[in-house]
Length: 462
Image 1: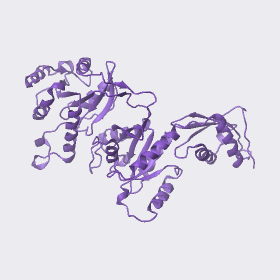
Image 2: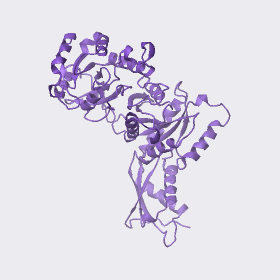
Image 3: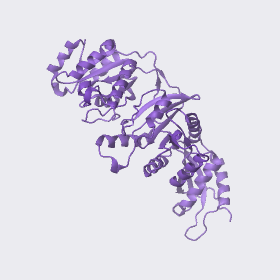
Image 4: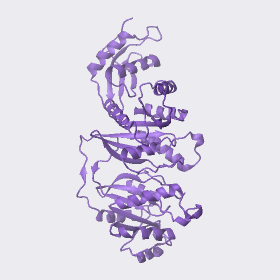
């Protein structure tokens, strides 16, 4: 994995407040990157989004939460919150209870009824709370903001998350209220395997993420598009540390009409840059779609390990050879990806999850495997003998030698007399031989063909 937490026991800082006060903007500002989705539409953030930040040289875990919504403003008849809003607020309450420091954010202007209700909710946590007023760029509405002190806060920090005003002052306030004595660095020999859960909406990504992390970090709902930001978490299995990235469901571009979903899908795809292995979640009842093929293709192009996860397998008819029939169908649908493991699971009750994680551990070992040049070229000589390159005047080429240039992703370079003449069929042949003979049976292989000097030539035999 490219970007996993580097410390244990990080103090947890939660950004809380009603919807649209700028929590996600401040989250991104403190991280110095665009991690959380920001949009003028209230309620964009649903799942808590966690990320390691470094403030004043000190590492901490920063948490962006969903906006607090007053019950009577829910828009649901009877004054009830909608199902998703109710789950958002429940997750926010859980984060508040577990946080070492709570940053309560107001918007410059008059205090609203939702602000007052949230302040009442936070009264038991006053000893670990900082009050912040956002959107005060250029002194905007600061005079009104000072009235917040009358609600019982000892101090107030005026900021503009968008423009960066007084962010240093807020950072100093955060650091002065945290204990870093228990923070320890992750040692070099602690491997972390990053798993990205990708797939269409409602295939069970969040359900599986919550089961793996033994938490309710991801909100689970039958409403498509519930997950928007990438939700991250850690867990341990068989002495291995895993980092899981639960992503938004990916639909066809023609089906995406909202900016929020557009950004959600983009960030889901970008998790491929951080992942070692992709769990492509497939609803066993719905079967395969072209969108599944596109997601798998993106993972393959980036050299990521891939496992096809047939979720909701418990709902399928329990007939003999059912899995074999589905496996044949998947192999036909995905063409050249017959090397990808297929694991049936039920994320809801955990059936098949142990097998899934055991397979991921074996796959990660293959991703990190390196073949010495001597062993590789001895194998290459055998392969060229078994299936010699074409000998026609226009198609003739010689492969002189090969080297492995990287692992995770696994990449090989073959040096040839005429690299442009090497056919796709012969490239596929060599990749299949690498998988079969050198211990890379479950992962994509990258093969580049370059012009090379006459270092060593394997001509092969007819």
